[in-house]
Image: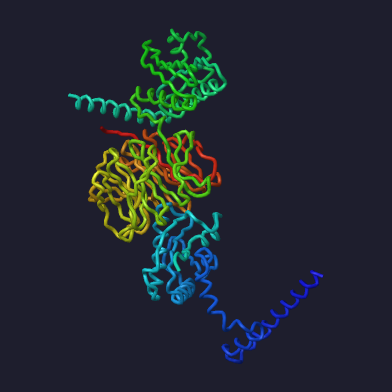
Length: 180
Length: 428
């Protein structure tokens, strides 16, 4: 009996997915209009409730929970460099926009490095990376009072392996929300 | 007059030290003093006493073999001497098997502890030259052995190193915390419990304080831990504050701070609690190290684009570059002889240790391979080097001799990094 119910659910799910996918390529109608139609078909309440829920959520959530949600995205750097890469700028712009939408949020920018530098110079490099990110956000209109920085050098790698792939992951700036 | 005598002693000590260095270099590592250490006389009553006495003897023998000052006779040579009267040793027989000096050790169990006495004889002249004894609990057996060894070193005009310690950072219990251990890796003890992150420790000259960086307040601040009082003093905050080095009198602390926007070198005075900025550049000036005479400061700077080593006068004047090979030279340490500098050089993303002789500008590579070798630091006598390496997978602390020989791994659990060997006063 249970299995049957799950089966029905799965089938229903696949159908809804399939339904969405099929509709999307046909983009003749202006997207705004299409969205309302689509959502009202699936879940009627969503378009009205969504913005309020998010505001309330941030209020209710602890800092750990907010950070776990991952509203702000990390960016990556080139070896031994601290300039913001062109391909990383859109991520920072999105982060800046989110910060503008939530003006009470304060953040800590952590600078991290791969293992191919001494502890000392990696602390310096991580600090330069965090500062480069801070300066970019300030240039996007975020108040400097809302931003703190710290460098962890190479002490907190995302990927502990010793290869190009791991190093590329570990050269990064992370965003931690420290006040809401 | 007193001053005069001190100066003469100083000359004598340094003279011997210099001579020792030359001898070692010419003979390619053959130590000077052939010492015979026959089995200790042991008078023990309990199992615990027996174990402690054995540990004491092993520690003493380990110290002598490690020193590069002594060359203990092998057991097969020792066995050739049949007459073992401890009160009247047959010095001629000991001389005939190649011993220059003879050490007679005696360990007795006494009220839950040990009494360790030792006598040193000159086999050629037949003179009794040194006698010492120590009393302590079983658990201090190693310390008694180290103290006796130090007395032997001092007698021969050498800097005592067997009671020296190594501070380091370990993540064996989860996060990076500050630890200390004996120079031989025994008695590893955790000092901090911040659950934050500790980094880059540096010993004071009196051996009672360690300057280190801690993230306990969120950012890398510089603290001094008073080891035997269990308290900390915040030295520098704002920006990142790292890589400290104590002066000989422990009153002046060099360190690097990014407070002005990039890392600059500062000098902190414990008495006045004032600080003075010494470097003014747009680059990262890091790892300041006093020269043994404290007239100059060695440091690394990326002012040329990549990290290189520089020396300046202690007031910041007369800056000159000293490394010209390789494009990434950092983490320097100045040997007590004032001539040698050990540092890390990065080539193709891997770190190896190099030795630079200031007098000749000669550079010698000390480690090789594809692993990372980092944060080298000289022993107080300049004959040994401690560093961390991930050659066995995780980072561990290793020691080796000044010529790269006698490599020994001191730590096993977790990652163990950023060693600092305790210092010793050269001048008074």
